[in-house]
Amino acid sequence: MPIDVAALRTHFPSLTHGLAFFDGPGGTQTPTPVAEAITRTLTGPLSNRGLVSPSERNAEQAVADFRAAYADLLGVPARSVVHGRSATQLTYDFSRHLAKDWRVGDEIVLSRLDHDANVRPWIQAAEHTGVTVRWIEIDAATTELDLDSYERALSPRTRLVALTAASNVLGTKPPLRRIADRAHEAGALVYVDGVHYAAHHLVDVPALGADLFVCSPYKFLGPHCGVLAGAPDLLEALQPDKLLPSTNEVPERFEFGTLPYEILAGATAAVDFLASMDTADAADTAGAAGGSRRERLTRSLWSLHEHENALRARVEDGLRALGDAVTVHSKAADRTPTVLMTLEGRDAREAQAHLAARGVVAPAGSFYAHEPFTALKLHDPALRVGLAPYTDTEDVDRLLDGLAAFL
Image 1 (cartoon, rainbow, N blue to C red):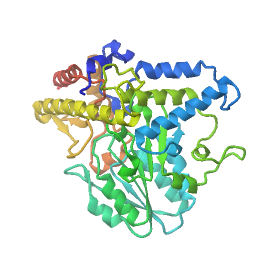
Image 2: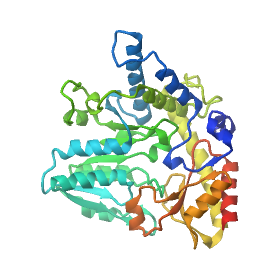
Image 3: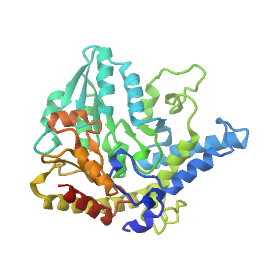
Image 4: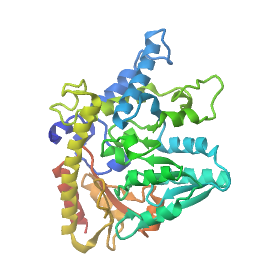
């Protein structure tokens, strides 16, 4: 079913302020069911995890529900799901876990397309261990990855290939399975930054070829945290530094300290909301639409994909109508509904301020995408426009009218 955007929007209290939000790639607005789940869990009764008191069991249930929800969202077993404060924190943690087995002479392969959260942790780990860094370059004409450079970068010494499933600034989606298969042929692990991808597509971690996949629920209607999905046998093989009394069970041994049970509950509620977006009531998370949660996610996220593609076409048509004053840098054939642009002779931050005065939120900057900006010689700041489930045609028209007035 198509998404009833007008009905969907009623579940987002922030939309009553009259703002048109195009900052979804940096973090989405929060629907009421997510906030209610956080409040309900936090106000308890709630204690540290255990099986004796109701408050302990509530904490246990929050953790179990979280793992089950992200198993359904990412297509992995529940014991593959690791919570973290952010995708950046998880990547730093796992760079240290993996680097314990690296030796001088080993190599890793990184991508010029990536957010710095999937670049700097690996570079720093390589520096500490004497490992060589190789690069997959970007084709400036298409903003696609240059796969010939990838073939040159791979070798029998490659231990890891780290890359994005979708660029957070350009929207480019590289041929991830093809890249992963070649990495595995070389004997390397594949670490995938799925933060931007998971906001727009149903994820199937094994089908993508990822050994480790990280995402951020706050990019798809949830609270601020990170989630990592890892192949169970790989998680069993990794031995993180940890406190002596803490459990050595997977995935708990990768989660340090007391978990934020209320955040886990909110992240679970976000998955349930995503699964019901194409129903008559997006807040009905009880499965009334029929099928397993994974099946409902499949239907709902396909509807979201159709909705966002239609709006992306409207945005791009409108930008073309503005002529040479706007240069769109998002050129890949396969990409998310995210558009990066520069404005001829104008400062993108001035455009951001002009739009904000008209109630349109579209940020300017480089968005931690240091490698893409450097490789493509992009001007910082650039203006980024990203779509979200609650974006409607009126929002798009307000954006385009505001840009036309600014120019």
